[in-house]
Amino acid sequence: MVQTGFSRRAMPDAPGKGYSTSKEDLAGVIWPGDATVVPRGWEIPTSGKKLRVAVPVKGAFFEFVKVEEDPATKEPTPRGYCIDIFDKVMASLPFSVPYEYVPYVGDHGDSSTSYDELVKQVSLGVVLIIKLWCGDGEKKFDAVAGDVTILAERLQYVDFTVPYTEAGVFMMVRLKEDKQRSAWIFLKPLTVELWLACFGGFVLTGFVVWVIENRLGTVQFQGSPMKVVGNVLYFTFSTLVFAQKENLKSSLTKAVVIIWVFVVLILTSSYTASLSSRLTVEKLQPSAADIDQLMRSGDRVGYGAGSYLRGLLKQSFSESRLVPLTGPDEYAAALSNGTVAAVFLELPYIKLFMKKYYTGYTVMGGPAKRTAGLGFVFPKDSPLLSDVSAAVLKVTQGPDMDDIEKNWMEINSTSKAQDDSTFPSATRLTLYSLRGLFLITGVTSLLAMLIAIVFTERAAPANNEEQQAPAPAGNHPPEDDAGDLADLNAGEARQGDGGQHEQQLAVLAHAG
Image 1 (cartoon, rainbow, N blue to C red):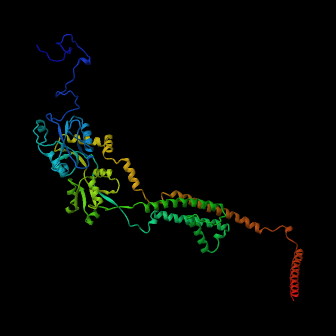
Image 2 (image 1 turned 135 degrees about the horizontal axis):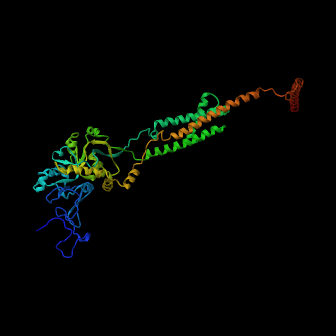
Image 3 (image 1 turned 45 degrees about the vertical axis):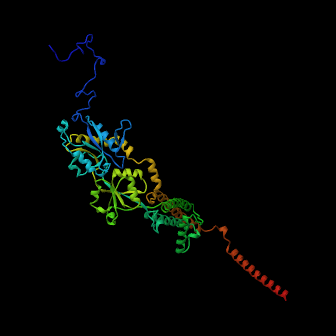
């Protein structure tokens, strides 16, 4: 009688083999489906087939996707920004999904002719899970891993995961030299508020010097109002070139002037540096300010060849003004030689362009057109879509995304350093940035003037009392003595006159 169930003996029919708890006596575990690998969870039934994931063969922007031949297996192997993200997403799913990459080549040797055709390859055939299980699906691809933009028109055929990149179409233009310099460029290093503060500082310093020195009787600061105003202004403005020569009597005045000269030194040094930067550094201006200016100008604009941007730009520009371009080199050449006035690209492509051409070009303002970003393509009603979308969010919000961005998209430090040295900053000096200097000189000037006024007012009554006090008796001669002294002085004067007369007669007689 055959019995089934568990036995205390691992191999009942084997002699000498009793019950054992040793791991070495146990064979490997065979999981359902004759698999020896521990499963991660439930698996999409594909009748032993792997998901065929289409990878676009691109003619430019290889940072997104580039198909190369593996030197070991001689098989085409994709790599790039999109591939790294897709691999991380599929590895983070709670179940196992076997897949393989299949390069997609269009009619012209690459997939840049039309991504719409690539998307339609996923929508062909039935995609129900039962059909997949039975293996009678007719579609060419089960998904697309590449730089495919999420568009409403494409959602008619396929479904997209949530986007894994930033969204938006931006306008990129060339920077050109501005050869028209203003006649008042010497005023631009300082803002209007700072110019007014400087003038106020000169006037305040001159007024404080006049108040203090005038009370001490300094000749340069006394006289008619016009003379005083002229001398005061000449004195304060001469501090610009440190040519003040007036002799100051008060120590308070000297302290005020010393602090103001320090402020003037800082101002002149900053002004000279800013003005030199504006005069010597090449002044660059964008060739077009915004999309409205482009629409009025009649200039041609460029876009990525084979992309959906052609239809998007036809809403604002005539078809004759649209120029298809392929790759960063063509974008730079067309902008430099004037073939196009601007190039419209999605933000991820602009990042890669700026990584290579980091000088001479700029992005104008916010997005000229709004898009949903790049996403992975799956068939309509795919059971994988919701789980893959959740995995995309998990990857893009995790630390792995930072490493992928640095590896493929980020501008290196050398480019940033060269960019900064090529376009040095020539910002205007503001009152806010130098407010500390004006605060110091203002407080010092007002405090010195207050001290001078207080001490002068206290010293004035004491001087008046000394002048009005009677002199001691011993210091004044008596009236009689005073009269005799007056007569004596008069007599001496008359004798002096008579002596001079006699001398004149003697000289005449000798001459005769």
